Image: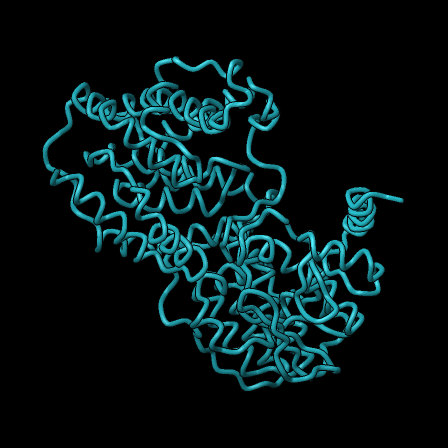
Length: 509
């Protein structure tokens, strides 16, 4: 007779087969009741709604949302396809979010379907699906992206509410910039006789500087006999220039967000100190604060370290080969990596204090910071050397966050644009706040993004004469909440005020 461990192994094999097929939403019909109950009782699956489950981690803390947020889009695609076949699609507004590259988890996913129940389907962690009974667009106006049925970009722009432009000005401008020629949208406007919508879309294109597309829409509609009044749906002019050459929607969103956020940073951040830093004195102060900085930065990431362990690892009084069974093993490797990375950061800092371009220095040196951060783990065989070869090549999810970092394919476009923004930015406070924020927003690496973001923040602070500033462990909840507010709600003010308060304390100490 099989042991309980052997029975669980059999059930896990069934679960793996489903996952190998790309199935995220597991229905009762996908496995026998015996396997389902065994996996459920051992924490390997979790019920989302009656009869539907997702894979889970048995070692996850109670109430942990990360696994659900990582599964959200896969679950919704599988569930909706099972329930409605292909006769469903996201609302115009949520289709537009997907087109713009925004895969953040919404509180409520709005779905159109002729079979809609017109009531919410409540899922995990305060999320839901609202399936509204509406006629679907023509098949030619629908498409699919990663198993999610969406309206095409032109169809969604025509169908969306005018409030979309007011409530989502960054996304709306990103989407308009993806239209390279009036013909992409004009034939649908003419086909449907959308004269009011045509006036609004023409005004929107003129707002972002695409005057030729706006003119073509107006002239073609008038030539077809429609009376049309151009109307700009945005409240303000675009803050950046949109050229005719199409850029990644991710890059355009970052460029617009940076331009829109920088004034908020300047309004809320203390002015740079007026006295010029002595390079040797500043580097000495950074050395003096190392123990405190390492303790708090590593602790924020969940490592269990003490100042005694950090000092022991820094001084070399710890041989990893003698401590493979030591409970401090992984923590000590992280502490040693932090020390090695800190030395590389200090070398970059010296260049910046000697008046080299801060943005250029970080662009040139950040890969070395990252390699040193994980070099001890590579030497110990816990991390593959290939993992340090460049930016991530797989999806990544942030613990407890509804923000889904950009897809790894987009990171190759985003990081060069990010460093260009750093190099072009004249204000050190903006470089520090937005540099930290956008680095962790992009999440270019599988691990270590928080530590790298704090290093980047501090060298940018130093470039403006601000002191090296530690983010204390006891402020972690406020720190993460402020990053979440900026990432999901696009509100940078709480994060700016949070960092500004810490910097002001460091200045007065």
